[in-house]
Amino acid sequence: MLNKIIETKKEEVAQLVLPPKESVKPVSFFNALQNTKNEVALIAEVKKASPSKGIIKGNFDPIQIAKEYESGGADAISVLTDSRYFQGKREYIPAIKKAVSLPILRKDFIIDENQVLESKLIGADAILLIAEVLEASKLYEFYQFATELGLDCLVEIHSSEALEGILSIFTPKIIGVNNRNLKTFEVTLEQTETITSYIPEESLFISESGIFTHDDILRVKKAGAKAVLVGESLMRAETPAQGILTLFGAGAAQ
Ligand SMILES: O=C(O)c1ccccc1NCC(=O)[C@H](O)[C@H](O)COP(=O)(O)O
Image (cartoon, rainbow, N blue to C red):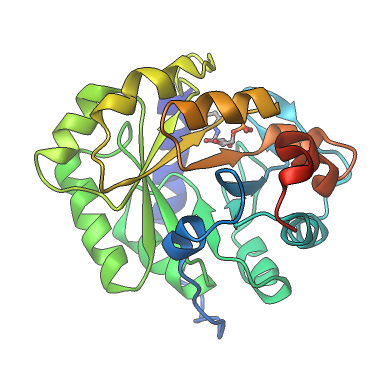
């Protein structure tokens, strides 16, 4: 599936037309996570559908969801912009950015420098760079370019080997371990527990995917995660704010 997603992405990138620059105020994604009042920082994802689950949220209003994430105590918002496999839109980013004051992570499959620039133009505060999709040297190139543009990068890894390749070149400020295997879709929090010992002390460590309960939060926190990235469980909750309450209990910072 990952190969299929990347093939589609190459076709899209070949036709990419850069949009005009949105006039929105940048907000530091890194600082928002560092300064959380939650047990661990929460990046709440706006996610309509996924290749592994199909449609997750039928009645989908991305702006309303983002506003409820903000009032429910999220520290940052992740917005899926891939249209073919996640039914996302790049237009969601400026629209959400204007409706909330939280930093926005653009979640997509970045394979080309123009997508980095596009992310800045549409008003994202951070982008995702996936080690399984990019050679370590290419990832570093995009990381540097994004940093020059004032974007934070969430460097996502799925194995200690990929992380070692990256660390031989540079130390990312933010590292995410995705608990979902992007090829088989198998999800296990053991991923976070296994890879934690390879994460440098100075990097902010995020556990991504498959987080459904307060026990899950406690489990990844115990493994060293300082933040979590959560999509499906929040999207399936009665309301997004209710979903945050379920994850954090009464301790959610509202
Ligand atoms: O979600 C998927 O099915 C998926 C499949 C292939 C590549 C990426 C995929 N998801 C992207 C993500 O990383 C998640 O949306 C994010 O971490 C939240 O995960 P979850 O809380 O499990 O919805």
